[in-house]
Length: 195
Image (cartoon, rainbow, N blue to C red; front, side):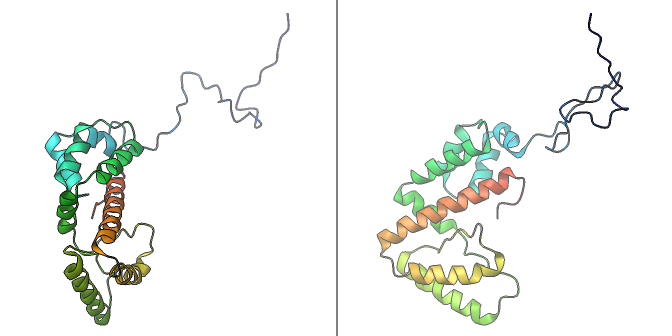
């Protein structure tokens, strides 16, 4: 019979990484990084929330009742990617009237703190021209744009989009609105503010 000499795990500093030390009466469990034990994730909270609460949270992401009802009605979502995909699909299905209502409810992009008054004047004039031409607020998703570049990006986009005809701009605005909803949902799923 073959006998193998075994060392105590504490004696062998070269214990392979895939082997856990033999500790009598203890079981090694990998650490969990999901927060406090028993605390549901934001997705689990969304999936199990009463319908009205889920709809209210969704309306903060995109002001479209049909979009919110559709997403809330298809719960539970197995993972954030599934919810985001459903959000995109529902946003693409908005009718022109629903899109117009959602655009009307959007606030103007916020200016960074410390923006000087000439920038406010230029932005207010650009917004007024945009609203006069298209009949709704200018929307833009600034996800991934450094805060220091927000003002320049907003002014640049609003000026270039003023050259669009109403049908072209409706398509661009719908895509920006879809991206905004996705960004807000992503923040909601991360447990952050949706503003």
